[in-house]
Length: 346
Image (cartoon, rainbow, N blue to C red):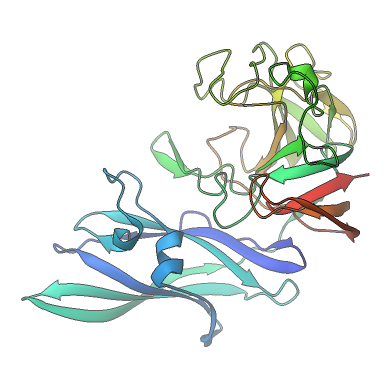
């Protein structure tokens, strides 16, 4: 478990989002049949059970080529590793203080299948989550690719300097829509047609500007259009990173070139304009990518949960821009938006 879980709160529920790395050090293949996440203080209390389809969906086999089919992901060859992406609902007010894990494993020996159990991955559950203001004004904003068990951000495991990390564990791509759920009006190949283009990106808290980039041209909107080759240096496009203190850094990506309103080393106040939303870097249309992590490296860090002190939930989506519908507005306080939400900020 490279990063111990910290309690996140979303939609009134507590969430533990973390990764369990399972390595087979035996000389024979082993198959994971079940994983149980337990309350360490009361092992009989099972927080989440993963088996069958749920287990296959939670497993990833990075580095294995060709990628195994879902039914084969749980079979780990000798010397190989699987990663379990845990998304465990827990009480927001009385979460476990620690978690542990019980694995049911099947292995073949002497032509026979033997089932055994193993326990491990004991870790404390963190409770220190920062509450911040809005990164944008108004809306409605779709929390695209937002926190969730199968979000692309959630599973963006990237090796940096030999260490696999997930900076985007709780990242959100904020995309502005109209009442019909459209992101633009007019010519779809022009950035200025998109509602998010040129919107102010705001400091979510007082902080210090520790990283800036402001020289990358915008893309023409479209899935395959990039103005520059995408590397670790250009993936975030024009961006700002704020040091919020206590080991937390806020990352604002894909801003308009020439739009930054702050300088390196500048102290900023909550609500101050940092730059304008754009379509630079690894971006298909104007939007704001926002996340908080534990170092000023945009991708070479571990993503941290946070909450916004307030926003209004105004719609729900069944997927990324799929089945989005307006709902009666609901005030949210002290919560993390998730990938099903359409929201408005003050």
